[in-house]
Length: 167
Image (cartoon, rainbow, N blue to C red; front, side, top):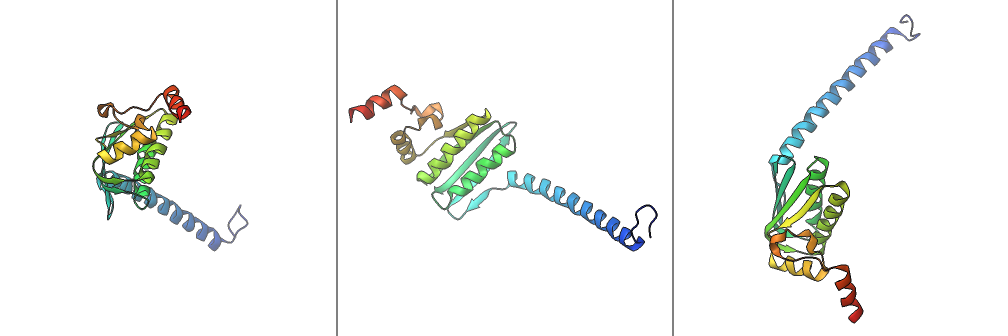
């Protein structure tokens, strides 16, 4: 028996050794997590039809997407955008110049990122959108997602109401 504990000495030794093992495992986990986070930023995330490259510059991140954004690849886009938010990025720009296709799954990922950025007091914008995506953005009235260079803006509520009222 170990004095003051009322436990057999071999049990106290086992518990002490077990705590040391748990501390070691937690330290290893933290080290692996740090290494994983650093690699995640440096290495591209990819899917056979979409690649995502992240470039950080201070509190700003540029995500460069290449390929197709659809139901299968939109989770990769959402994951990259979530990682930016979790890493404390204050401004996220998404370069879409190399995107060959984007359906409503991709648009939904961008809308969700925009809403979460607004709620967090950060910025989010799309850059160099392909023509097909510009058309979807125009039809859906989500021009607020775009950088001002495109000249596509969301219709005002008054104009949108007038348009719907006339139909």
